[in-house]
Length: 342
Image (cartoon, rainbow, N blue to C red; front, side, top):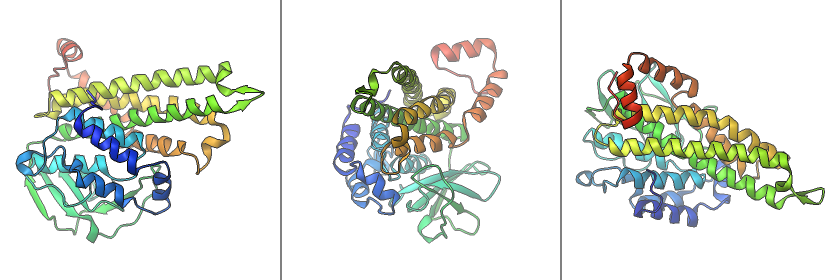
């Protein structure tokens, strides 16, 4: 479930409404970081929402935090809110103190480096080292940072872990699949929310814009394009909701939510092309301008679609997992959400 009515979500929504007006994402991309927005989020303790009370957070329910993440994506928020939530959740699960300031995350790979979302702004980087079952915290402010090519307005930098001494590290019982499940679900929620906002922009535009003496919304071709896009948005929201509900049910062992998270990743990944094309088409030339708001959503959608790998990679991984699962266990997983680890 994605609870947009709970206290955490409502607090986040109010902050984004007050401090993330449409000019903020534009200014952030021009180099003016919205520090007031980040300060308001931290003053209300929202980056610590998934941190246990014993560790200085307030252990909020997952569905409420997903509601806050939904609000951030709808506002095209240019601060690492979701990334800090994930990073602090990883630290908390390893019994480590939450990050002092903003944070982003990385999963260990075949090289001693990783592309970090919000790498130019995050104060800390949290690394999951699968080989040693460790979670470590690094100070990103002392690293040499250079921006990488990125579709997302949020930017990307490469962090070289070799040669950097971790500020703290600890063993963890989290599996890579468990962390993947949370990250993929967070991205799914963000993508579904961004789609809804972009759909709203498109409907508003075709309702107000006239051609040949009548609103664009009266043309059957436009109606057809937006009807198809709206159905894809609904499917994306349902997939994200199912994944978020699975994470909430299996909060102690998020690996059990891996299948639902991957299904959401694949479904929404396929939906991205199906919605971004008509959104830009119905806007015409306006949709391709830097000054208009649409690209703040569509560029993030393209970037989030590729985060941790695109839908084709995850379709293959899901197929490989199901191929070694018995038909009875597949049916049980589909009907009850209780998947047997493979």
